[in-house]
Length: 459
Image (cartoon, rainbow, N blue to C red):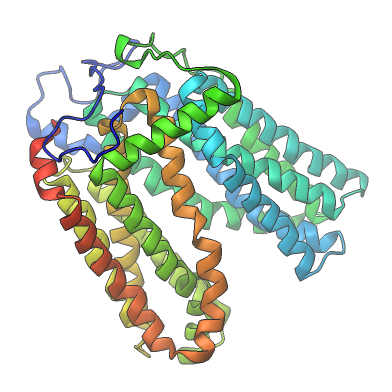
């Protein structure tokens, strides 16, 4: 492959043929029935669920995300129940993050070499074994901090393999026109289950059982059902000629795969500059959101924890609605313009959060930010699945995953010390405005306006 940047008007390398319908003969809602366009549009958001394999896969993802939301609470109280303090909790939480970051890139390489269905099943089996070990140790009164740290590492590593494989399998079981809706469904249920329903259910369980570790049986049940549903997902269709590749094996093969994905990213301006934008966004936004927002709420509104919790809930509701709205529509013809625009402009209200003393205005601004983030995220996930060659989709998805997470710890580490020397208002102003500046820069340098015209996507 050449080392220079690919012109924006050139076609994507090694394009993949698009199947007319998903394997297995499933028919989407409103398609092929003589229904008019209004009926098809009415059911656009739910249309992927007409495909049997997607129903099984999506059900497994729902249960897995729900289990992750439960584990976030069960883990905290199990650490406390084992006699641990803040330091021990940090060790367990850091183990999860280390597992995730360590396996994000290998997970993408595996998703391009190994059947995705097999990866998903193995990950869920390992999740089930890890949580079951905690539940069994809890029943025996033998839970230890090292044990919890190992379990957390396994769960984080599993996520590093799971989601590149999930992203890579979708184009193989769904028609291209339904990928936007499928990503919207996943984008809608993630905050609803991982940030709300899962933790709430875990809180009820922890309060009802004798020891916090006993509540891990609820997480075990979620992952067991997820594994059961994955057993009903049928084999993927045969690999097409364009997906065949002659790649070396072993360590040399892994390095070859990684180098190929990096080269493709560097030569694809819209992809490269969107990832650079996401890196800058994570650096300036995540720290103020995660570290400073609780203190701003406490100092300007009140010390009642429910006030902060409600703000997070509003933020999550915005994300759910953003995912639902975008996936209920056709993919925009100017898809890169809409994606970068909604991310950049949608970050501006965050600047207001750091300035205002009005609680309702803070809630409204966070709702808009959550809506905009998820709206653009669904488009982004769909573009990866439609414009990245299938043979390297797992690797590109893992690069996106890794880049998005890599600077989060740094952003959170810098937010606190920075607030000691810089006014809070200035930090939030920068967090709201800089993403817009970065978005405009990425849009212009990558030539996204010309690129999206040169590469129209059918709707």
